[in-house]
Length: 120
Image (cartoon, rainbow, N blue to C red):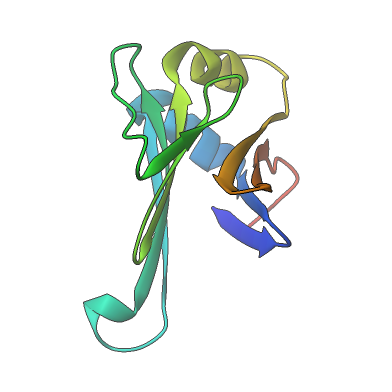
């Protein structure tokens, strides 16, 4: 899974294998090490949520279509409601997109896309 951060945009691109894994397990995880210790690692994940999953308004924002983002030091998790996840993985729909308010007058754009031409 590729993670791209640029100018208040967070973008996750999943290979065909990763889309299949997400459809089957409801979770795909990636990480990048910046040093030797566990506190020097950035982990990022895409997770399917249930309709009853609670959103913590202090650590999570939610887009209009239900995408949610959780950030904790060293961890970024994008959460997708089960129905939307099933539609995305089970159809030709290429991407999911939304925006969340992250600070006064600042929004973070979230993109989750299939990277089906990727061969990595």
